[in-house]
Length: 534
Image (tube, rainbow, N blue to C red):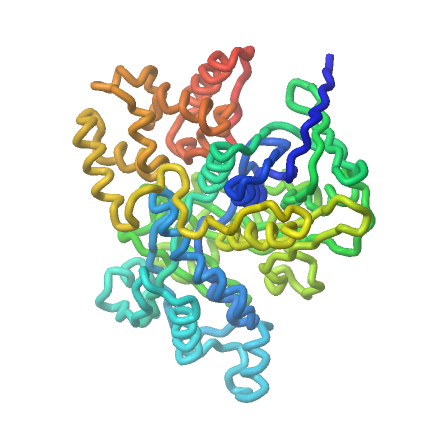
């Protein structure tokens, strides 16, 4: 039977949503001395924030839409974030093949301007235009850590080997990778370490103004309800942000989101080097092909208007065919559905700016403050993972008149848990870890440092041999690591561990996954249940 409890002490901020924006805001606010509570109805990063293309990037193609401020902010953030999380983010080089006969059905502002000035350019992105865009990309954000763009001769460079012979020239530029769902969890961990209360699998069932406070009622997975009071409410519901406004808070609004589905495929490894590809499509879109989890290649993303519930998003057969055909126009060896080992899809909650197509809709974020009826409500629309930290700073700037006691901005280059080492210190950290724990092979040591950074030692503890880490579930996942994920990283199920805290689900069989789920349920005092891989 459900129980009800009331919290009498009001917090400064109550955050709805455990994606990157919600957890980023909670961390920033807690670090400024504010009291914070956050409720997420599922696992952290269970929707959009674990379904991205996993890049810290400025968004090269957004320059075609003249979104210079957005690109500049994102480019500045790339290096700020690299310094704060050198375990879960790292530089990558991207290869953009060029062929002079390529034509595109592009309706960007840049293409329209070019067509008006030079009609013979209709349907083309000439080499000089691409190089100009990359020059701007190199210099717009004050790049310091990352190498500049260069031109490649694909007939001689290893990057040309997997590509069709018609591509003899390419441009190579810098962007960065990030483990998106781990980024969310580490923000939540740091928020909690600074005093925030993080409630996962806890749904907000109602929120209403109660004088100068918000009264927020939650229900957890055991059915227990609780009433919280807060001086400010932040709606960071991601794809559910509009639903929260209309149905949870029950306010009328003219603002809304445009749900755009981004789908990806993961294939067996398609090439041997460690560079990524930026492919341009005849439909004006682009996709990336990225080395993924050592043995695979990640290809994406699509841009499709999404109908229905955000959690119903899947990479459809049509999208799989689109991505394989797109990549096959570049690779020597065609990519087929048989090469696909996994797919995933997420819904991006873009601010509805009235753009004609999903591709043209803005990726910028909008922070909308409703303070007309007393206690403030801040609704977070849109955004991209690269600018989550700046979004959090902007959110708190909006709330500062209502919470004047908050401290100053502090998160720039402040390390996330496990990230307290130099940007170029990853290999040294791996070597030291393997030296102190000789039973680790290089691949295992690298995986642990990539996931946990300096915290890897806390997981390994005083282990002298593999057996000291408890049950070996396969793919180097041990009982000691699962215990850490339950106790310190909010994991509750096998899916949490295998598809969000890691991607080890790519390497484990169904019986191994079932054993992990049973072990986790036993550790938490829960009954038996069969796990289903995502």
